[in-house]
Length: 474
Image 1 (cartoon, helix red, strand yellow):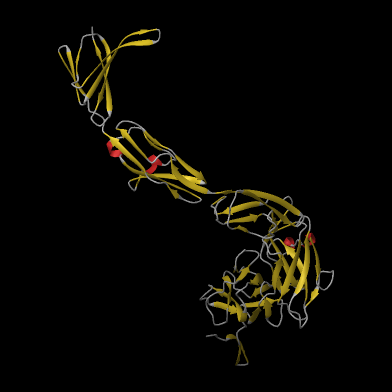
Image 2 (cartoon, rainbow, N blue to C red):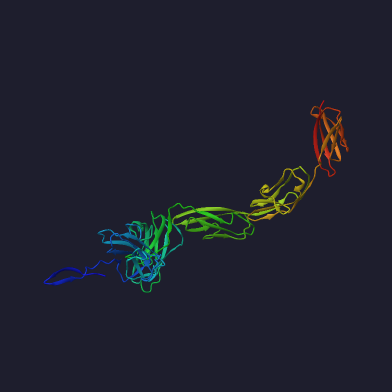
């Protein structure tokens, strides 16, 4: 409730005056227009009549009745770098830069100023705004990388009737004078050799022709078609402008090693256009029904820059052929099985009776340094790489070697564990020859009648042998 203020009485009459008007929070949008603005257009929201000590937040709403802030716009106070301002004593205004982004199109949009932003007691909104789609600007050739000296065509659609448009180059989203690189391009249009087109009532598209000049290189470059007051802008996706020389490379999928009849995709990068040694112009190059090892090269061109790269494709013919199909050994002996694996093999795994032998046997050769009866079985090799192959089976039979025991009884040596016993003692060495004493029997009984070192070979009934040695003292 507001009360009048008693000022005084004159001649018995009291004079009452109404209260002074209280300043109301306000926000105005400029440039002032019919209320219609374009996506990407830069606007100013000017806030006035704030209350000192109060922090205000600016948000965009889809309508004056909405409560959820829009996300398809940016609002920034140049002094704070945010969408807020704390009102100072004697402050008269605060300016915010507003830009609507794709997705904000529609009628009834408002800018809301409040403290706090969602349930404030000090609140105001702008007049209703209509946001229209920005013109569409596309580049040909389509690429994310161009080079100094390259010529491009920028095709614009969706302009406003009666407007004139020019094209400019920026190093960030426009408009910002410090990021304007338009001096580093040479533009022309489909209407004239100057950088201006007029949008008529029957116009559906227009083209700008641009050459990227020296010192235009860098990342995050944008070409922008704009009317003269920057209220209607078409902006390309960001791209990179490189200087010469350029570096071209080739990525191969799935591999440089290709199976007979297989396919491989070669993708070049680092330039705007590509010509392959096969005569194909474009990217990527797909090779099908591969049949022989070959080297392919590509030349990439970006503007006035060019570079080449090459890759060798190798015919991949993985095989798994074992050197033998079977072997029979006595326990304690080594077993080595080699293989031929062809071209393109990268991994090997041996299996015994269907079970992987793990990391112990992951080479092209099976090696058992001390075969035992438990190693007997069926072995295969699986080879993988650009393709896989499995060998035929290798069958291993391991026979047990004799278990030999010796016993000395008086002047006799008793040996057991076999069916045949062969004694050798070296008596002397003359002119490189050995003079040997040899004895052989089936009993395993030998007289200890001469001093020296002896060797006894014991043969089992399965043909396996084991050798023992000993010494007879004087």
